[in-house]
Length: 490
Image (tube, rainbow, N blue to C red; front, side, top):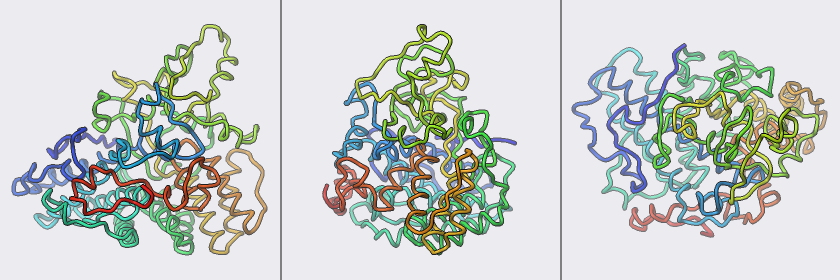
């Protein structure tokens, strides 16, 4: 099968750089619509440009873990990506480059999708409805990211927004944003195919899984149970749990039946630290690598996103997911035949002795220089295990403990862990614990703690009523003429 590679400049929408503002990253009139969207090829180029804006997934991996009890920021020093250290310590405010990047990247994706809808009636051709369905699902994904991070956000549909409109654009209540997300996903689910021949294209199963997640985040448990239950029962995409969890996150085992919604990456194009979103490789992988490492199996990196002792201790010693998720570097070195010949450095940004073993640079998975930035390891936005656990939670919260246990125990059986026979709240807590064990290192933990009301219990410095969302970047408030209020507490 062919893989869809998403090049940033596939259409001349402009380059995202450090000086770009929220809504001018794709400058108005950069591409004259009169001379574009006149052929099937123009629409194909445009939709690949939308796919491209899903690639900065490293931000979700970092923030979803570092903001939680799963990991610390790490890095060369506390001033190395300072915004991540502030998020780790719950001291982040309106000046934070990582949070600004989240807003810019997702609104750029929305602008690109809206550009297609703005011109959808220019021509007709076979397959246009599929392109529009892909655009709807990705627009939903971008808006879901924004509403998770920031709450109320301006809702702009089916058109680009001019820089001149920013000062009059208000933040839309998140309930309305969620309604649009649901509408886009339901529409996309009806059109997207169950399977694709071009690896990386979106499917109806991916749309259904994301819809189930969106419903779960809103506490719509009955609806989530219906959507996720139907996805599991029909399983038109042929999804299933990969047999060997310990090797699931190797490049060799990508695009397997467990992958429901996956962002594809390539090791075939270089990049630089000045424009991480310009990459086609998964930047998280090199950043998670072991600093100045010299030894077998792994490759050197930047020691970011370091798992905590608390996460390591959460696993039973017999659970194979512990070592698959958390690399205990000293234990690994000690187990090698030549431990005295293996060395690494500790960064000034903190050290736990652990590394993210899911998204980490391995010696035989390097891409082109700079190989910190060109890993071909894909990012799994939603995999089948997550679908099963989301369904378990939705069923339990809607009163069906039997079905909840069934889905939960499928996940546990894969890693030879005993079945759970609990009921009621004990079952609910068991499902949430299982989510941590199964999905740690993948960017879910902070959001799970927030949406279930457990963040203050587990995250040091977390202030209820404030830290459930992140601050709106102050520069974007200024660019909007002060028309946007900052989130409470910031």
